[in-house]
Amino acid sequence: MTEPSAALAELTEISSQIESAVRFGADGKVVAATIPDEPAAQVAASAKALFEQAAQIGDGELTQIEASTADGSLFVVKDGTTTIAASTSAEPTAGLVFYDLKECLRAVAKPPAKPAAKPKPKPKPKPRTPRPKSNGTS
Amino acid sequence: MGRRRLIALGFAVGSLLGIGLYARRGREGRERIDLYFADGSLVSLHSDSPEAAPLLVHAHDALRAAAT
Image 1 (spheres, rainbow over the protein chains, first blue to last red):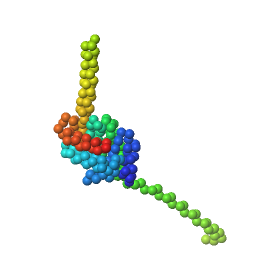
Image 2 (image 1 turned 120 degrees about the vertical axis):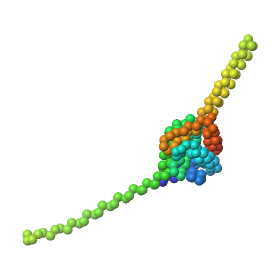
Image 3 (image 1 turned 90 degrees about the vertical axis):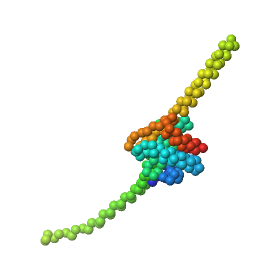
Image 4 (image 1 turned 60 degrees about the vertical axis):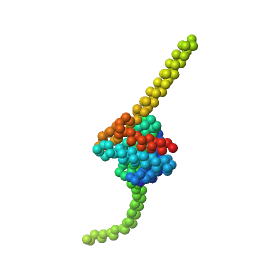
């Protein structure tokens, strides 16, 4: 499993559009963030409230939100019990941002890759024992 | 001559004011919330819809906190 904070740092590094990102659990507790603790907790609380309120609007299961405002856009993506909220500048490429956020969630959820198994040493060839010469009688 | 200048100045100021108001209105009018559901459906709520207003409040709060 990728370290949560490392995954978020990689996210902001990869995506030039994402300015900040906060990952939080079902209880709204911040798991990792690219911003200091206090604002991260506020972002998580607002994003959680936004998601819960928005989920009541449609009939189906809500998976992601894009809130476009004059100050910038807020993206919220939920995957199971984990949610990630990211802020971008105004008018981002929504598809790319959603893709990057989902990739980040996937990377965090993925089990760690097993270290490559050591190649087994080849069994040493057994020393050949000379066959006893047949004396012609069987 | 002075009167002409005054008219031209008034016209210029009025134009700038109009452009400013139009740009501001355009920015505010662009606010919206897009909700994506697991079945692939999308609900887009514009800022003038009653359902969007409370959601936009949370979005503004989150963006404000993220910017600090």
